[in-house]
Image 1 (cartoon, rainbow, N blue to C red):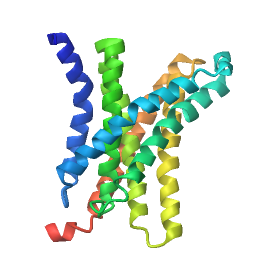
Image 2: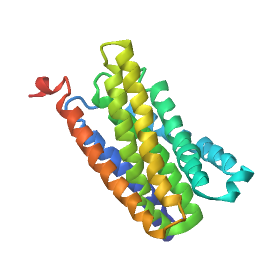
Image 3: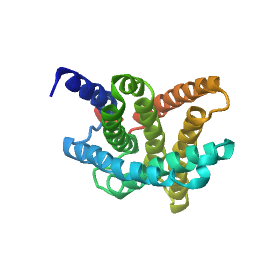
Length: 233
């Protein structure tokens, strides 16, 4: 491995790992065991390739070549957002959500971020091998934090769902955990993919910034509402 290849690899993987570490440190009242965290991260990485294959297959529809606003909306909200957030959502429900170690609402955020960062990290490595350092650096400050923000939002609602008092309440929170990140991700990608006005890409950065602020607020809210907080204090 050449020094450049090593540097490129580190640039691709460090953002996701640093975000995982940050979330782990924020879970200060009842930290998760390393094994479930690693398994969940690897689960997120494992879904990356099939998700990208689905997106590649869906992008091959002939009518998408016509372009236009509706095609951009479909590509943003269905091909990309629905596929990525949908599979990450199913992964969260299939493993961490049903497990005994998921024992407080904050865990929804922790494990959703592990899945999101597993996905984003492997996706980053694949992009790095194709497009090089410039794209990898750009994604370190855009795509990876975006996946983290979407994951926090998903995890917040799924954490609320896990400990809802009624079945109806659980269903409402679960729907919110699916729809909210899907919608925000779709809007973010729409401003990136649209070709009508180049300057509209700035709005993608606005969406990203707002998502990060919201994610931070939800993270602090779940941290403060931890049932283990009083035990620690």
